[in-house]
Length: 347
Ligand code: KG4
Ligand code: ZN
Image 1 (cartoon, rainbow, N blue to C red):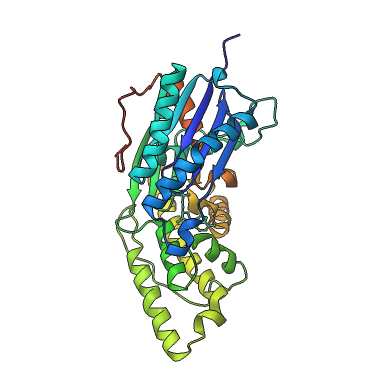
Image 2: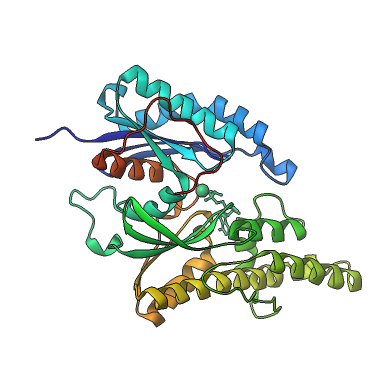
């Protein structure tokens, strides 16, 4: 029997320090240390994020190895997020990964964060199963993925694990930013996306109507929505200073409904244009309960098979870096030790 492929993966692109261990594409552990320090500043402070990564990286890697029941001598390769992200944060993970690969004399795998979000859909969803996951839980190629995170909004056409094409993207703000900036206007702390989701559950999404931008093709725009929400809140708060407080759930539900409809209308268009009926969502905003529900409903109407990563693999995590690293390892796509982190990189 050939030796299993055991990968240690590190994700540190923004404000989560995460380490995962995979064996033959199965996730054995996925440890995430978040950073609450940014809440008081209303957004991620890059220098504070880098410092927190430095504090967290050793204990997080140690915990991931222990949880997986692994020793460093069991490792086949080290994967890490190379790009995109905050450069100081990326540097902590990339230099740690390079040092570990050098010390253990094993290959290094440089992973693109957005590609990894897409491939979170290929993580087997039943870790206890002794047999491979049923084919229905993993999307077959080619498939479409709506990737919605704090910095990106993309429709990706995936031909194979390492061959992906961005066929639509945002021209300004990302969907996550639209959630977070709306939340800020409502006086909610950062990151506001999960809070809008929470309040929206008790609200009426049809109570207030926000405009849908008319952007040609498969691209998105969210900056107009943000401006219309700002004016809407200013006007109503001028008439009633308690407007936000008394209508928070309905406002959140209405904002969320509009963001979701902007996203799904473009995905529907992409599916009709390409004729592809296997569709996924990925990225932090795919944790949104309204998007998950509306995506499933649209899939049923359109005759798609729909796929959503397990909740813990939607927001930033190292398991998605491990699965991408796994496919890179199988393809022999190794990185030299001279590889450097990059804040922005096309793919
Ligand atoms: O993918 P991610 O964890 O990090 C980036 O790569 O950016 O995405 C973070 C984004 C943030 O904007 C956050 O507010 C949003 O995902 N987010 C949500 C929810 N959970 C996370 N937005 C709406 N509803 C949620 N439940
Ligand atoms: Zn991300």
